[in-house]
Image (cartoon, rainbow, N blue to C red; front, side, top):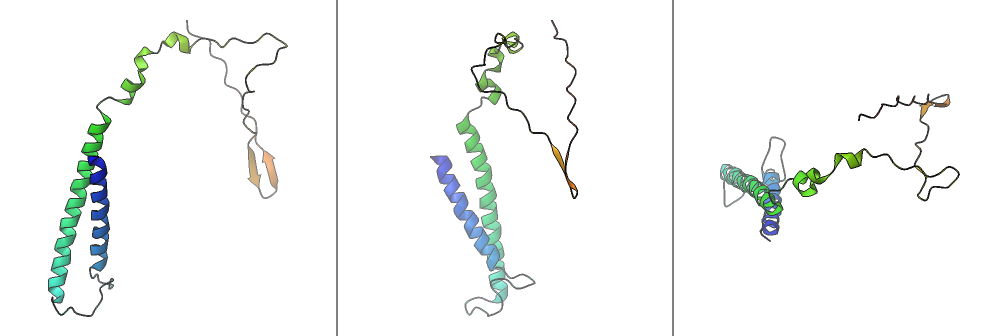
Length: 142
């Protein structure tokens, strides 16, 4: 709830920050170019917009830090490793050999995927690449 409220406020502040920055005069002009304001002098409006930009930027960064802290507290202090319970995995089960079906029978699952043979594109046509040599089998550590 608090996270959503802070996020909405952050989006509103970001919108107003963009508007105020676009309203400022730059060397090349801007959205506010020329045409004086009867209520304020040119220098006074520049000071007001600069001050407003600084205030909105400060609010934007403070809200960003606050959002980070609140999101971290809502998520909890447990790490990914703690949530997956990696310590409960038995390494001996990971290294077990997969039982092979008897010869002449079809495997019940889908066939393993085979990567396509890579080709090299050239202006003279597709050239098949050399097939990679399989790595030598390592003896299992006992």
